[in-house]
Image (cartoon, rainbow, N blue to C red):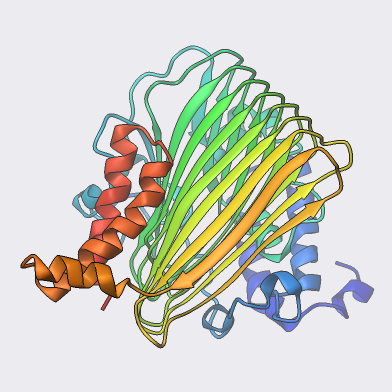
Length: 439
């Protein structure tokens, strides 16, 4: 970094510059990637952490992260051993079906905790580090300019992640399961590229112990007619922070079916930017954030419609207990000439205590004429008439309350149309929250 640039460094970046030098000392990678890392570290040094003065971040309180940002830890002596998680500790988080499983411990691949069978011809599934050794061409161009602050920091500090690539027409029947186990700080990457007509299912679960920070970036490219089903479960330790950015590009007739369930972390934020570039592309997002205590969660989604006849459907529900705070930011942008767009956004929130609060901001940016677009948001409490109805039939008040909350939240899972095993996993974590949350 030049002397002139150094004068513009933010104080936020100071703890990360030593970590950056340590990462460079432990990785073996192509020269182009090291150059890219340095550029992204420079960018984060100039940007620093987002602030509430920025419109996209004005509802998100980053103080729990800024006060003492966790730094990447050195690799464990043996992945899955030593101070790492015991295999049995992962059992409650695993998909109840055969999978190709890759476990990342503090952002590094842990082979002792991972499992999977033979892959069909035309499928590449491997850690990022292995991909850089054997197929670096797959990742060239995957680190874009103009990254926002946390994505830039991820591109500078990442040590591993997962790459899934399918050749045209390949259907991967067995789901890919990615477990992020975070104890200190993890900057992991997920790269998914499906060729024309390819299909895959990915389950991504973030969990861990202690007040760590998981900061992930997902880059998704779907060729013409490709279909990706993507379930994301964020259930990290109550003291943890979680930030994630997803960038997806959809070609003609491609479909991105996403479902997000957010229950963990003291602070969490998931930013999704989906570009429907091809004609007839479809993006569906169903999800829920379930919060208690002093948890804060933000789900920010932007869908850019560029092609003809594209469709976006977003249904996000929030259940907020204690003094928790939920935020939904949804933007559907329709470019000039993107005629035939059909876009719907709905955010519904259920407040279970007087201290809980929500900020919801669904927006439409329409620059085409022949479109059907709608958006809406609701905030309310449990229906007293329904509670009375259940109690009048002999159901105690606490059970009645739980039944109504579960029915409200599970609708977001059921509407996603997930395969049975994925829906069962999501419902399991919903019940887990109900057992320990909603106080």
